[in-house]
Image (cartoon, rainbow, N blue to C red):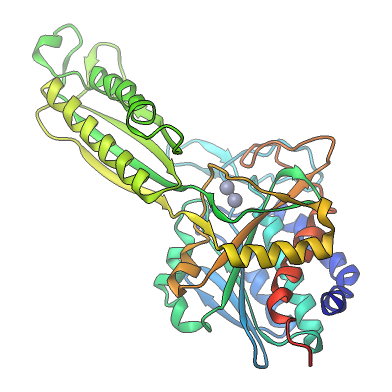
Length: 407
Ligand code: ZN
Ligand code: ZN
């Protein structure tokens, strides 16, 4: 613990620029895969702390080699969401963008990735400023496009595994609607695997007054939506976790025309690969069978996108980090996170290296006033103790490995 305290001696000074940077990032959110300003800021600061900085697949990686010892990778995501901010904060975002339907929407850090960036940069500075307190290699990875599940993959496709040392352990965190100052850990599956499917069913267009001459894809889609509800209730073993949601149906545009196709957007969440396969097989079987039942002239098509891997925390790493958190924060500030139905692409990078990992939650809201869920237009974490807790958590978890050997 002595060595952790040595690194954290610099926190008051770090906090000064960190709070300013956080508000600046919050006011200047960037959508997934468009994080130019944010990644520029990250790279500039990492360089000023003395890191070897590389741009990889739209992200930024800083490597600080400090003698023999373990390599610890820490990760923050940088992207914001197409959400119009309604927090009323003095540093609220006023940015807008045009969404795929042509509508103008706001851009907002509604998932707190600005917190993640500020905390990891703070931890990066603290470790760089106290090299005598630890030994090994610290890797600070800032990834783009978490919300679209594209960012980690983009960094891997740009050769990440060849360009940085193989980490012995990987660490990630997320700010949540819990009380600020509290961290939550969880061994095993913690975030679900997520799949989105664009399903196109083909009918036969006709005049609305002559349904007998067409095949109505609206009725077909309605039948599919209802039948899909039986997957979780009738096919998945009771007690196993699965979610099937139809988030969008688009077909036709006027009352007197039977359209020739319908497009359904379906979202799946699972914790177990076997359950996931059961659900995927059931969705495809039901849609094909309903198309056949309707007399569809063509089979349906299935396009999988926004696929998130399972986040499955390593038991040993989670135990080590939880113990370090308890020693630093005190037992009452360390809770069990529990499983969330949300998804993340964090695990792609450690999985590509075969590296064990843990991913924890930090609170961001006053204890007496629980926050709105992530992605809400009113998601406004309190600046402190959110930033200091997230920064300390990264330092404490990294130092559980880097500060181990007394010299
Ligand atoms: Zn999010
Ligand atoms: Zn997020």
